[in-house]
Length: 160
Image 1 (cartoon, rainbow, N blue to C red):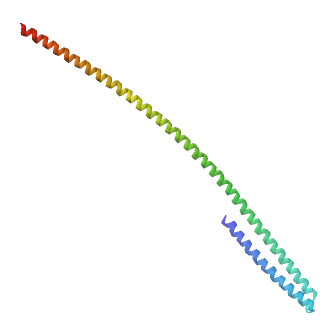
Image 2 (spheres, rainbow, N blue to C red):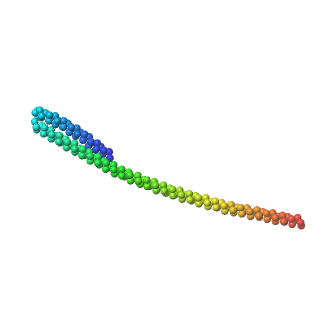
Image 3 (tube, rainbow, N blue to C red):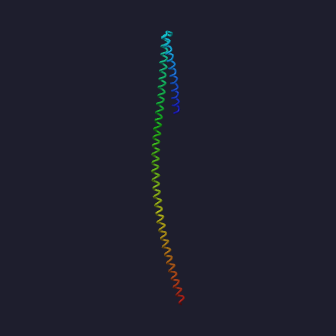
């Protein structure tokens, strides 16, 4: 990429040089035309200068053409890179959106499992509490019955 930019800058410098040469040649032609009008130079010199001016103009247009080609090439590469970045950005957004949906789904599933686990634990604790209560109730009844049996035996023994 930097080589292309360097080439483009070099082409622009060459274009500037060619433009300067063209301007110098134009000044020479103007000077020589004014001298020709005054009769100091011959028509052959004027023709040579005109020919040199045409060559310089041709070289300047060639340099301009090369600079334009380089600029178009850079523009195409930048457009290609821009399209690649745009596609990458689109894919990134899609993957983020998909990941977000998956995270939300996993969150919902986790909450459902946690609620289910809490409900099952509450039911298990209720059942354990009920069995503990029934066990204590039966234990109290056995104690009461045992005390009754002991009292009855103690009354029977004291009557004998």
